[in-house]
Length: 383
Picture (cartoon, rainbow, N blue to C red):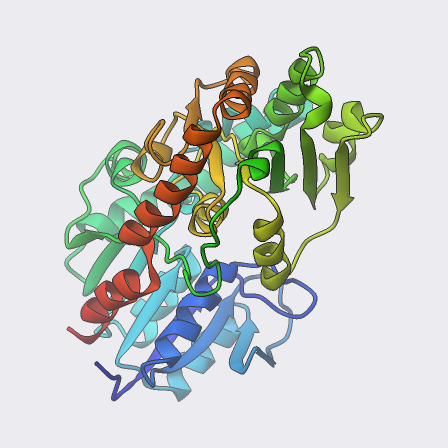
């Protein structure tokens, strides 16, 4: 299949040389579309940009600006479809005013389709945090949920929806918008199996445990990972284990402080490029990735593609991608001791580790391989 017309990727953020992690999964889509000679342009719409500017990232031309800039940009350019990630009122209002007949494909990823209370765990530390989220519930969240309800129900626009998991569609997106999303499809975020290629693990890899996570919020449950290590420190085999924590964010130093005195724990502050992550995957055998809320868990799925055994949480959409004791180990929610017990299970059972590693790589390819995901998306884009 090949593209014969021009398409616009419209999003709220996109990678640049100084911000490598800004929706990198969207960039991977664009690069995959290019393999089919897709004519794609990217516009980043956000009020944080006072002037319109363009740059090239990994041979992809990107324009970014605010609502006024997008209005003028859309007047000047014609597209067969607009492909939207993290939809906002500014995006839809501009499209309705300029080109209301243009077909849209809207991906539903997570926070843009959630009610305010879904991330309760981020607002428990202080009264100020709680006041702030309650204020946001009256403005930002109320406006966004009204938008999602409109998009699901409207006949004014030509829209198809892509949800990245069945759980998120049925238990969050549609519940919080109080409406059923018509013309909806379930297609997970792609995992590039050529980039995150599988290399068979040895039994010793089960002793090497890797964590690569953001520390911007408590969504990623990094505090549970730390508590699990502290629990394991009381067990006789602890010194044989090796942990490495990579990441950055406002909670990084505080969260990892209790681990800094352990000789078998490495702590690296800073973000990694994709090739650096892929190389680390080859050195380790276990990926520590508990969570409190995930519509998929892309970094977890990438580690599985490389053959790491995911230690995740039996919550939200995670069980759609990890089957307990077949392709990974799932802990009970909010239970660091259960995480520690799963690490112990791998320590004492080499065969379990090796089987989980192989099954992780095989099963995630069946669900999220580039060929499967991009083929499905292209069918929708070209239809």
